[in-house]
Length: 393
Image (cartoon, rainbow, N blue to C red):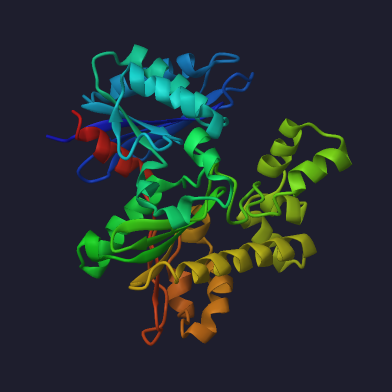
């Protein structure tokens, strides 16, 4: 009998959903309800390989979207054993998945100040889904849990320690489900126990992060207190001088919220290129000589290479460097440009392997003589959530 789990990822104006076989990772149904609260709210899904789309009522919210999703699921005849929910921030309280109860809901709300764009939307989705599926176990899987193994030297900021003790100001890390999936996948590829597998994992999408994993344990990661620090991202700035937000407030006459919006939604690849946050668009424009696109790609890859090189310090038994996420899996140019900085480390890509390892294929992309192997591994965060939720069924 299949262990099929409904996986929900609720954003502020969207609900991503899927039915995942917890044993195999197969998705019989996947889709997204988007533009919630707007006049053009819609629901798109793929069922057994067939794509469909339907309009939602004008200004439909999460409740209407989940009701429509419930109808689709009911029509499949699937009998799910649990519902797994992605929640971005679990602070230090959650070192693993948790069965939803009042204390868990309260904690998610308490941590919302650390992920204001995510946690409250996640919470709303959980409560709405509980009403739609009151008899199923609801399980939350936190982005931050995987990084609760970080040592203090990696997660403590050089600020007064009272800020950590009294307010929880520290590095938390995100994309944990993706990095965990990559770790487990690489252990199988290398035919090693997870506890003996050491990798540097680069999750590159609209949000980006690099994680250092030594012998199956996360020891450092680039995202910090909120999902803003570290690499250049689609619309997020990544690392910058901490004096800049205050300086920009004064120079531009903007509020703290407006500066936060600038750093989170107007920066990164979009801000540098003045064209797009979509890497595919930038690569096409770069081929035509667009200076902003060329610069954005160059900065993106240079910063990424510096992080990967820096994490070699944290992973002394390094088995492989791994690219994943929408950009990491599909952009041979980004991988080639990034790894070009590692020629003097004895790491060289095989051009044909790098070209072939796109669009879901994956595989090793370095030459056989390279000092360190580099792989592309397609991620499957939904499978991680489904597998963890199934343990509570």
